[in-house]
View (cartoon, helix red, strand yellow):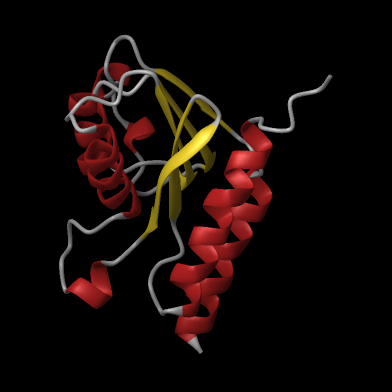
Length: 148
């Protein structure tokens, strides 16, 4: 039997979070944290609503997942993010010791991938490109709407 809970399934859940952010006027980035094929945390950007530059989707999801797990480390977890993490979020993910990071679209301007690979924990697997076009299109649509 095929497992319906795969990278694409969970990225679609992150895209739902990103769409919520879009609808609220936030930069449309969504994140979900998965443990044992179960979503234990989900979030989107809250920087405008909270007036907090650190309120990125990843940071919010890390906090929610740690609360759910009752500890600060996210070992055994995967985070799905619609956009490549920035340096701040990559650092937070490093300290969380998360097992895997999967992101959709690359962020050529602010993504952590512009820097050396040492930004992620050495044991963390990182993959990208899952639903990249859908993730990228939502971001582009958001900024096109802002420019009008």
